[in-house]
Image 1 (cartoon, rainbow, N blue to C red):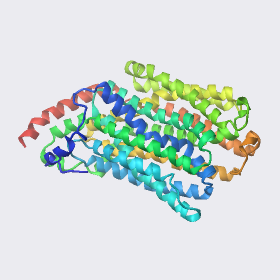
Image 2 (cartoon, rainbow, N blue to C red; image 1 turned 30 degrees about the horizontal axis):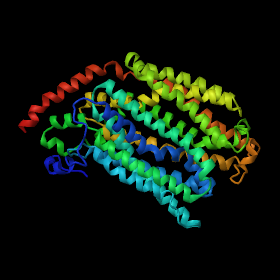
Image 3 (tube, helix red, strand yellow; image 1 turned 30 degrees about the vertical axis):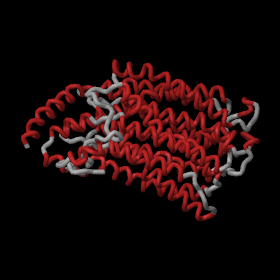
Image 4 (cartoon, rainbow, N blue to C red; image 1 turned 180 degrees about the vertical axis):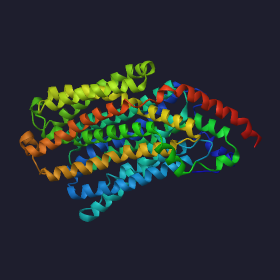
Amino acid sequence: MTEKATAPQKSKGLWESPFTSSLAKRDRVTPPEVIFGYFLGPFGGLLASGIFTSQLQNYFTDVLRLDLSFLTALQLVSTVLIVIANLMVGQLIERTHCLAGKARPWILLSALTLAVSTVLMFFVPFEGMARMVWIAIAFNLYYSVAYPIYNTANSTLVAVSTRDTEKRGTMASFTNIAGFGVMGAGTMVFPILVSFFLKEDQNLWLLAMGAIALFTLITVYLQFRFTRERITEEVSASQTEGEQKEAPSLARQLSSVAHEPMWWIIIVAYLLYQFSGAFKNGSMVYFCKWVLDNSYFGTAEAWGASQSLLSIMGALPMAAAILFVIPLCNKFGKQRVCIVGMIVGVIGGIIAGLGGSSIVPVAAGVAIKCLGSAPLGYMILAMLADVIDHIEYKNHIRTDGLTMSIYSCIAVAATPICNAIFSGILAGVGYDQAADVALGVAAQTAAAQTAIAGCYIWVETVAFAICGVLLLFFTVEKNLPAEQAALKERNEGAAPEAERA
């Protein structure tokens, strides 16, 4: 996968073949690149993850009937492997030098690894202890191998595709729209499929996820074909042959990001945003099953309809937000718009929390909360890319690989860590795995209902309040245009020297 920078022509045949050459030929970002490279590709690449976030815990507890203690241990131990894998992938990307770029070759590899590992998660041929071993292996093949490869490379693409901040904002928005879209598919469409068709039939689960794996394979391949790393090309053209042999050491990258306050602000904000969202998504099916009064839809067993309604109420405002988030950010700046969004999100969370078991106020609060979360959700990758440029201006090195591997660590580790904690909470409050869903709110104890509601509503609401305060200190946009102009001049000035070398 990785080739020596001193002999890029050796890979020319591979990366310029009809099946692997980039279809993004222009120096500027075009609509097909945005659609296939930053929306459809990420949608397919992240689709299984969106379903897992919403339904994997439910599949483990209520279909496979796995022990809660085992699930807690599995997901906590796996987190260590996940973090290590993401950091390794980030450094592999940083040290990849070939005609296709440094992130795109890994996108191509992940088309296969994502599809295979998705199927293996639901192909469970064993019982008893052997079943738990199989699940542990399959779980880590997805979360510690396939997903880190894809998500780190996918996240890196926004930062290396262009220095145009408006185009960067557009690409980041479409990438995050895809992310929210898969969450919508996982929380709107799939719950209905589960509650009315798949139920507890493992063969049907396997069939459904096999179809999703095929979709992932096709769309991620299209993403690879329709993307281009313009900044990687710019930096490579400015470097001498000797410089291209070595990427900045991990120690130097760590020092550069560790001493940059803007980097810490946006990373911590993203951590709070992602982990609180994982708590919400992981507990949503339980909230709809055991906390909401589903008799609103005629029967207590209609939890799938409740989950779909809440998902729709959350998805519609976020879909509408794309119409004004990018223009507002271009006019007023990402920081200001995101702070206002966090305030709106807190208000929505309070309304939902006060709604209790009534679907109407809860749905209204969820809609307002999701509307408020849209600016930060859409702009987080663009803000990280701005910070990477800022660090490059100050320290003369790019930290795409390290930053995006940490970004990916947070994204992929959020679900298993929060599900592990949530499993422990369920065990601690006496959650009844064998409860009859037909009993609705009467099936679980008050303690279990309170814990579930807290994870679904209040964790995210508090996190939004903290994010809003943090973003008050995020000022990287103030001098960014001048810094980017200096970077372009620096790299263009270095190019002739590289050619002489």
